[in-house]
Image 1 (tube, rainbow, N blue to C red):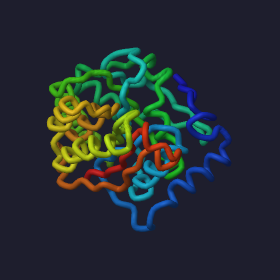
Image 2 (cartoon, rainbow, N blue to C red):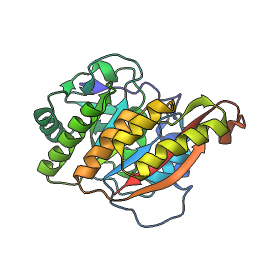
Image 3 (tube, rainbow, N blue to C red):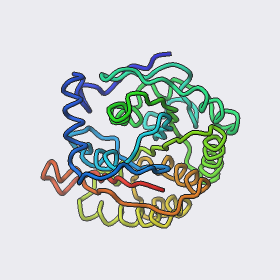
Image 4 (cartoon, rainbow, N blue to C red):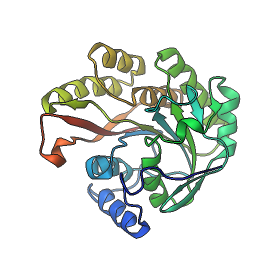
Length: 269
């Protein structure tokens, strides 16, 4: 199966040369340094004009292995609760990225909740927007796209442990990307306050606490489930450190501080 891009030309350039230049600019916004080997990252999935600098800040700091699991929230409500894209390729203006069938097979075997389901991915942007960054930094990257549409911590823990066990058995380095924006359509003051509470739980490597805070404080962090699953997996793989690379809001671009979306980029190692 081949999955063609749905937001090329809207969230990022559909012209390969322009997209390459756009990515170079977004990745150059941070201070240079050696690429770090990390277990997972959190990065936003809005249009590059709004969140690209935040995503680029974390991507510019890390080494991209040949296998990447991308966890995205299901905004459309279509498909199964843990939808794994079947065998095939994902296309962007930069070329084709193959589905890592070996790693996908391990995940399916270890997690009964995971189902092969292309329908959940058909009109979902939360995974797609990360792929040009990954391809630009590692043209040989293979991916495991998982679109998540459940909301309980028991399922987060079950899937996160299954991912960790699959990565251990896979035997080569794997990066887990958790795709998430932060608070949506609140004032910059309110969004920043709520996002600080949510990120406080991330810094503590407390995925269950993250879900609890988002529910209690009405933090509209759309990828809270992907982030929690990534954190569970990273803890199983020995994570001890979380680093905030960049935080910003859409208001930093638009100048409108009354209704913003928050964006955060963090690494877990």
